[in-house]
Image (cartoon, rainbow, N blue to C red; front, side, top):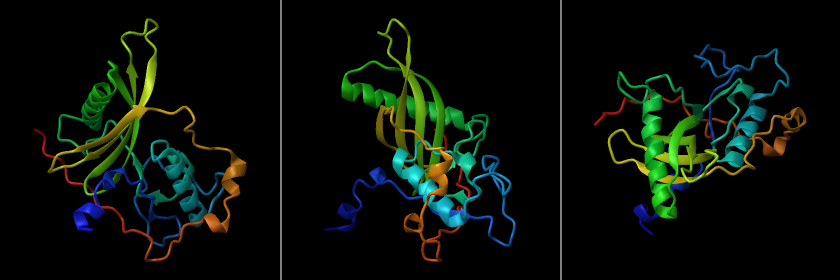
Length: 216
């Protein structure tokens, strides 16, 4: 089997979250605003428990629904700030890019399923770096044939490339069973068998800021 065949379809692979920074580090590091958990908040999880909890949420929701406010550690998965500009050039903001990605994803879904859903707006999105950016977007759409004008939530997985053609991996209605557990008992019951190793071989280096894409 050649290398191309070995990695064919890799955009479908669900990547585990890896640790970038933890409160245990002696040197200070930049803490994003979305990390709101402090040492005074309960439950106070160890770094190993946070790694296990993060990957539990990644696996259970395929990375779409992560409660970042529960963590003190910085991981490879991040929420998209709609008002920031790290993925676009001014005067655009990230939400402009998400709008385009959602439109294209929903168009593909409509063609494949003979439907006519119309895009409404993005709700939230997560991302991680992966030879570009892997976006995990949750957005609203509506069926114009629905007299009640009810919106429906969709999920889109898009591998966005700064220099090559982007890959619209899938678009689907969001399953109602995808929920992130916030039950305190389930958080503190993470045992050692479920902890992901944090040795030097398994912990990734801090991610570099992505280059801004060239807009067409």
